[in-house]
Picture 1 (cartoon, rainbow, N blue to C red):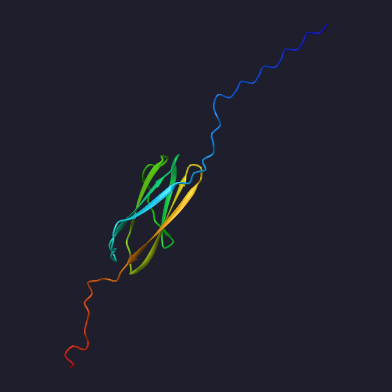
Picture 2 (cartoon, rainbow, N blue to C red):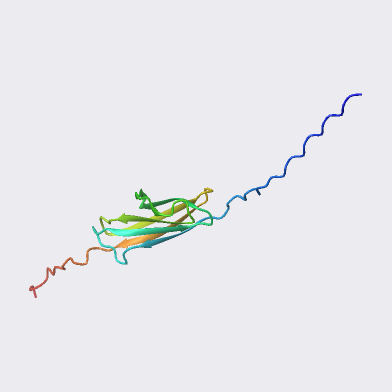
Length: 132
């Protein structure tokens, strides 16, 4: 008589629960440093991003030109802040677009418009003065 084969051991139940994928998009705010920006004067742009897990990247563009800066606080944490400096070179509207991405790759974009007025210190010249 042949010996009975030993029964295969039961697989042990996994002790860790499977993680649910992160489907929650971060939130983002843009704060502009000046109410009335001036030509040639640097102004800060602060971006704050929050997430339920972790922010991994923040980017900022002004009129499609990427601004360089590192996240000043919070990379890899649920709240991250990044500050950029922008110096308007001429009067007009400038569009600021900020993007934040979380650890799972979820991204959000926000935008603000900066309006830079003509220099207010220019004196008006009256060419008709004294011709009456």
